[in-house]
Length: 178
Image (cartoon, rainbow, N blue to C red):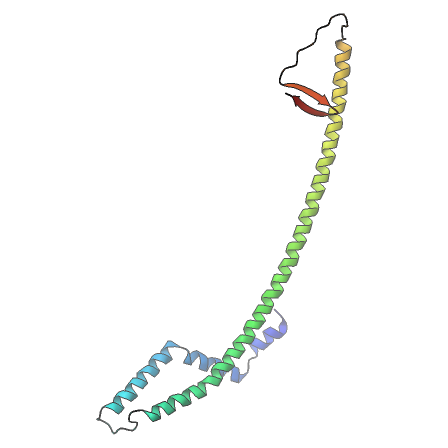
């Protein structure tokens, strides 16, 4: 979070603090219940004739008092809402900054993983090439060994019959002849 946002929050004015207190009070269940009880008492005392009626039906004085209360409380509520809106904007900006930073870090990690994968693929290809060369050398050595130990007798015309699973090697690759 930026320093200016922290300073703004910690150094709220007296008016902003009063607006927050008034809004918290007016917006509480305690206030609603107390006000409802007072309104019911006001109406009850003015309807029955025990006491002199100071505000007869349609309760013009009560309407005036409630209008005054609403007119007086509304600016406090709006100031508190504006302040809370500013705090919410600051939080949203902070969240956006964090999200952008996280996105950059994720992209960086993706690039690192891609480079590691590419390096591993290159190493595997090199290892496969070395294995293919080793296999070719082994095949050549085996062919020489077979030729030196078992010369082909041209007088006999016998061939080995091919079966369904005869393995044929060609240039270091194994294929199954079906």
